[in-house]
Amino acid sequence: MRVLGVDPGLTRCGVGVVEGVAGRPLAMVGVGVVRTPADAELSHRLLAVEQGIEHWLDEHRPEFVAVERVFSQHNVRTVMGTAQASAVAMLCAARRGIPVALHTPSEVKAAVTGSGRADKAQVGAMVTRLLRLDAPPKPADAADALALAICHIWRAPAQNRLQQAVALHASKGRTA
Image (tube, rainbow, N blue to C red; front, top):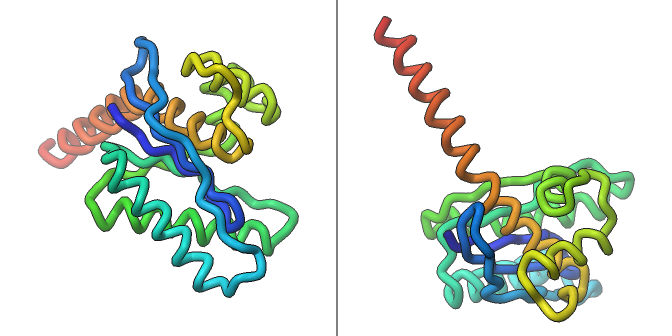
């Protein structure tokens, strides 16, 4: 399974591609950051994020895209930009028919470190260890994108089984 993880943001949008399956060693395919100038017009920044993500989709051909679910922050301006970048990532994937999964920050931290309250340094250290890298990816947005991809690879099989069970149960309820 090849997953593009996206840590959405307007100034720095982390992107990382991981390949593998749950229970086996994972491999980093690529990692980076799509950057936009803070003083640019919002529409141009969103276009730059879209072009950057399209480039990553073209270059790495992921089977899934995992995006960090936007949660309420105290700074409304920050959360709006994050939500807009998140929507751009989902749109790019949907345009190509690539399934999108949303994962909360605490879900990703718990999957990668064992604690939903882990800090950025702990996430970076575990991403480094899990992908057998020489050093943590910089900036933290890049490490977070890889963590999202890892989380999806590990959680997708269970989520798929759960969705299939719910669908089976629902279909039996309609025929009864």
